[in-house]
Image (cartoon, rainbow, N blue to C red; front, top):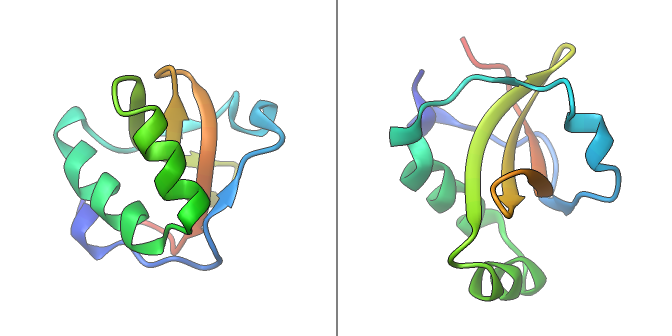
Length: 91
């Protein structure tokens, strides 16, 4: 997967329904963490950047597919979706 080619479809948002991502299919690899981090950071608001600072020891980043939609997701405590952005389909 080319994580460097991610393109957002909407603004980064705070996840209010984590259950939406329960059946998410992971499409990224552990090695993609840095690229996803940088992608979300450039889209992030001040609230997102504050969240990053507060969770620097327990966040995880992943690109996932839920049904027919693709997302870049920042997880809190490695398991709870905290921030997400819908992205263009991954080829």
